Length: 256
Image 1: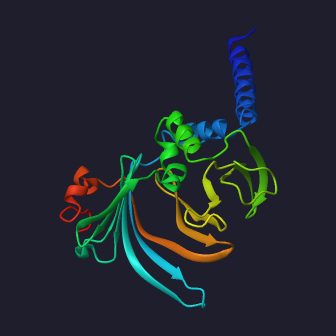
Image 2 (image 1 turned 90 degrees about the vertical axis):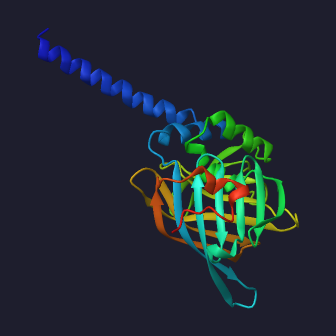
Image 3 (image 1 turned 135 degrees about the vertical axis):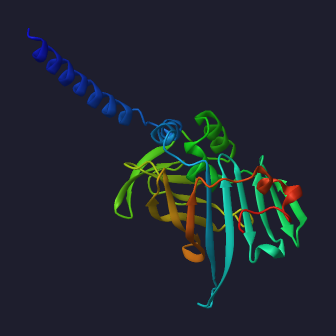
C-alpha cells in the first residue's frame, strides 16, 4: 500500500471511530449523573471563571403592575456569588459563598444560613467543578438523578432530570440536548409546598468563552412573579477575593 493511501485510510478509520465515539457518548446519557458529567466535559476548557453584570430586577405584581430596581452581580466559579441590591453605597445585598447565604443591610450582616444555590450550580458551577461535587449537590438538594426523559420545549429537544414524563410538580431540572445548557428548574415552593416554582433561563448568548442566559424568569403556579434582565456582561474580569469576603462587604466592590 502506498504511503499516501495508507494515511488516507488511517484518517478515514479515525474519523469513523471519532463519529462512533460521539454517538457512544450521546448514548451514555442514561440518567442525571451521566448528564451532569456530559455538561462538565463539554465546557470544562471553554467556560469563564469570573463574571459580572448589571441586572434589572422586575417584580410583577398580581394586579398587573410592576416595579424594578438595579442590582449588580459578580460570580467567582465555582460557588461564589455576590449581589448588591440597589445603589452600591447603600450596603444592601446577598453573598453566597462556602455553602452559606449571608444577607446584608446597611453594610452589616442581617441574616445567615446554610445554602447551596442550585441555579448557580446547574447554570454555572457544573462546567467548572468536579462532576462528583455537582452530582452530590443535586442529590442532597432532592433531585432524583435516576429519572431522565426527553421533551420538546421552547423549540428544542431537552433532557428532563428528576421526574417522569408528564410530571410538572416534582423537583426537576431541564437541559438542552444539543447545547447541554441548563434552561429550567421546577420545584415546590420552599415556604408553601402547595405552590410550584418554575425558573427559566432565557436569551442565551455566546461569550468569548462559554455562554450566559441574559434573562431569568421566575414563575409561581404558572404566573410570572419576577424577572431578571442582564446588561454590561463582562467575562473573566479580574476580581479581588475581598469582593466575596463578608467581613469586607461594605468596603470592597468591583464597580468603580
